[in-house]
Structure formats: structure tokens, C-alpha cells
Amino acid sequence: MPSSVVVTTPNDLEIRVTRNFDAPRDLVFAYHTKCQYVQKWLLGPPGWGMPECDIDLRVGGRYRYVWRNDASGKEFGVSGEFREIAAPERIVIIERMDGVPGSAHVTTVFVENGSGTAFSITIRFESKEHRDGALQSGMTDGMSMSYDRLDEAVATQH
Image (cartoon, rainbow, N blue to C red; front, side, top):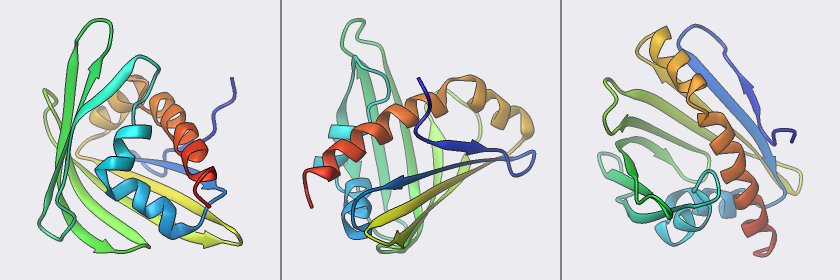
């Protein structure tokens, strides 16, 4: 199945994922910043849910997501801190995955593109090994599935 995202590695430390959404920027931004929306689409492969979502959307505010596999009960989580918020254009966070050393600097940009939104997320890791490990984890496949789900959700909203 072709991926709905374009994944590039601009340098040895970064992964950039881009995608277009057929929805207004304000709506796409809201779906990234409100738990009632995030818990519906940011789920990765089928069979996963997000029972825990906390978002304190302010500079210095924190967020936390915990995913759970429906069949096995396995959980993993990610947490971080908002460093910059320029609604609805840009969000910068520092992100840490449970059980994974180090952190990542994540910049998400939302650009109006005609009737839709051009979206990019740039993840800067502390080392090439961390970046390569993320690429090999299947992270971008899960992102692609999630963004497809987001596209379906926002299509019904505008």
C-alpha cells in the first residue's frame, strides 16, 4: 500500500514527514492539540487505542499520550513539553518516549494551501543512531496510518 506521507532525512539527525490535508488549517491544528480529537486519530496500526491523553497547550505546558494494544494490553507512552506555540501555524515540542534514552526536538508546521493544509513535521534526534532507530521502528508507517485516519475525520468536519 503506498504511503500517504513523504518521509525524508534532511541530514544525519532529522526525519521530515510531509502530507497534505483537504481541510482548513485551523481544523488540522485543532486535531493536533485537543485530546477529544487526538484520541480518535493518533492511533497507529489497527488494534491500538489511546486511553490516556493530556495536553496543556501553552509554552512550558506538558503533554502525555499512552497507547494500549487491544489484544495484548501492551502499553507505551510519550510525553513532552511545548516550547513554542504559534496557533495555527507552528508548534515546537521536546518529546521523550517511555523506555527510550534521549529526547527529540519536534517542529510541526501547518501552511494554508488553497482549500487545504500542507503539513510538515521535522523530528531532530540527539544522534544518528536514535534517528535510524526511529526509522527502523516502523514509526513512519504508524504515522501514515494515523494521518489517513485524521484525513477521514477532518473531511467530515468542513
